[in-house]
Length: 146
Image 1 (cartoon, rainbow, N blue to C red):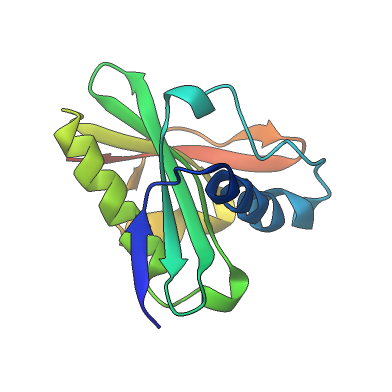
Image 2 (cartoon, one colour):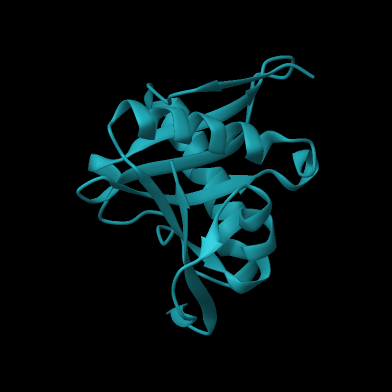
């Protein structure tokens, strides 16, 4: 398995990118199609993990400037068949590199409560209190100093 991290460029790239986000982050919770997108899409840097052997997008993530020097990481999703293989870690590393190049000093994310341990293992810490984000889904603000 050869995984490369790329930026989606074509219409087909973005179609597959958003499809994976929906299948992993929204569909399992009964959310409607198009909830996988938000108002920050146009100002975000988007990254995708591609299985080069199969020509398939297997992971996605994005980052945008939340406030001066603070990047907001969101929509990290990895195809269930590819989870626990380091792809999320590769996507986070790509975002961190882009964030440093953009002059960010902090990365933050709204983590679902069941994923906070994953982000802690990747250097983030809880910096906010849990709140409801999407229906009954609880999230907490986490940060990582760069």
